[in-house]
Amino acid sequence: MVNFAAMLTKTRAIVLHSLKYGEKRMIVDMLTREHGRVEFIVSVSHSAKAKMRKQFFQPLTMLEIECDLRQRVQLQRLREVRIVHPYATIPFDQYKLSLLFFIAEVLSASTRGEQQNQNLYDYVEASMLWLDGCPGSYANFHLVFMMRLTRFIGFLPNIEGYREGDVFDIRAAEFTSAVPLHRDFIAAADAARISTLMRMNYDTMHLFRMSRDDRNRIVDVLLTYYKMHVPNFPELRSLAVVKQLFEDK
Image 1 (cartoon, one colour):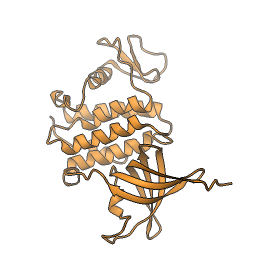
Image 2 (cartoon, helix red, strand yellow):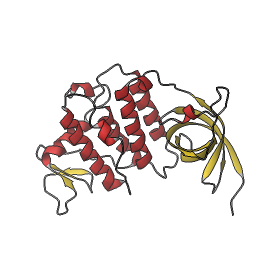
Image 3 (cartoon, one colour):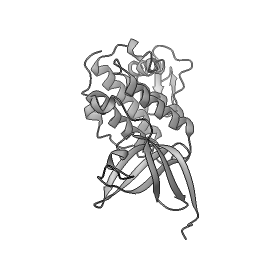
């Protein structure tokens, strides 16, 4: 039996994905700060005065929501919603917007079933606000985001003891001088890229000059790593677009 006891709650939320459901409704998947991943059924209107408008539910829109959460109900219902951090630059910058869609796909695939994780939520929010405010030199943003995201979803690589020439054991998430007996490892040249990436953050990543080919190789390595540690991690539709971004810089 469905438990109809409802809990009225307010929380910040980041939209991950939305899907049209009939003529006037949408299913919206969100990462909330207080309750992790939650799916909502939303009735939308094109009226400028409507409480629920389609533009509220674009990928990685940052919201404050009020909702009734009911146990054992798959699709929850929203009472109130407002945008708390309107993006100033991302919607008008094709490069930033392409990175946003890619990040939204990565998050949708890697946080399924995520329960309350305020540190994860705060990391995503702070990262997107950083990108929105960054005037330039953000070509490595998606790489740094993906690497640091692993800390919050449970498979941060162990880089202690790395030495030049080590390979990276994907299963064990660590570097080793001995080639593993299984095939799930990254050869020394690409393992060195992971070690370098672990030293980057948003403020210093512009100091690490990379070619487009370098970045694309790293993103492929990272996705191989994600697929090992996230069950049923899909092929990302936005990957092809991201791989065409930026020249050698």
